[in-house]
Length: 385
Image 1 (tube, rainbow, N blue to C red):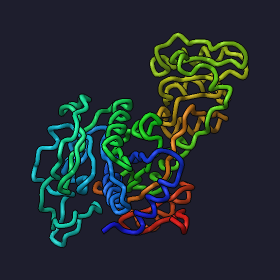
Image 2: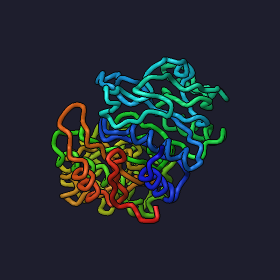
Image 3: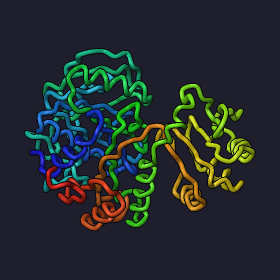
């Protein structure tokens, strides 16, 4: 049965402007992303919203392919729509959601679907509705409807454009709420071309230190909350700009002759250093530690940088802090609504946190709804939610 807290969190997220599409992104592996996804799927179904499910990679296995740790399966109710590689629909007879001990407890916080007990059961039965022709390493993606609830394996393309096309197909088939399971650290799942809205799962598996984990959450939220570009910057022909360009306050854009800022950050910094005051550095690709370090070496901390959206900012905390301390600012052409954060105090690779303390500390830096959906703790949720 869906708990009230998850329903409140879902209503709070959907009340924000934008399409009914939500990406789930994780702070790290084992952060609680799949548990959050499963809770939201149940809440959507309970609210009468047909969920549409897909992944930017491969999600829903019983055992993590990298860490070899057990992980919760993705549960889909009857009537849900899925976009996945056709071979992934072959029944595997695996446990619906993770590994269970003799008491029926799943240390990862997962839940058994109705009718199953202690991890016995199989995969969902899915009726194929349409072929999409979109390839994945496992095979072409199809759109299917779940006719018997159970676990599903979601295999999707990594391309934002292809994921966006699959979201369109799910909605055309009747999905009222699309949930995208972003692969580990695949922030692109939240890109404006995909969903433009995300829920971040933060877990104790990130670090043995709760201070370190909270600091990383703060860092990611600062990036997702970057301000929108000034209007006159957006009128400079963003679709036709070179990959790396200087936008002087007067005159046309000036291309920097590099394939990307990642390829030659020193050349970008050299060109920026020679630019007149008031110039903006426009990046069509990623903003990385290498470029920030090169700019700082030339004392260009005051140079405004313009990127497409927050998923393009890949700088780590150390370089980012140095950049910000020297007055560095970054703007985005298109923003992303990181609508909520879920916390998971359990770690399969290190010490656990105190659930109430961890949730409260994340809430202090988040400025948006934060909830531990397993422990039943929440902050920053309005009473009407």
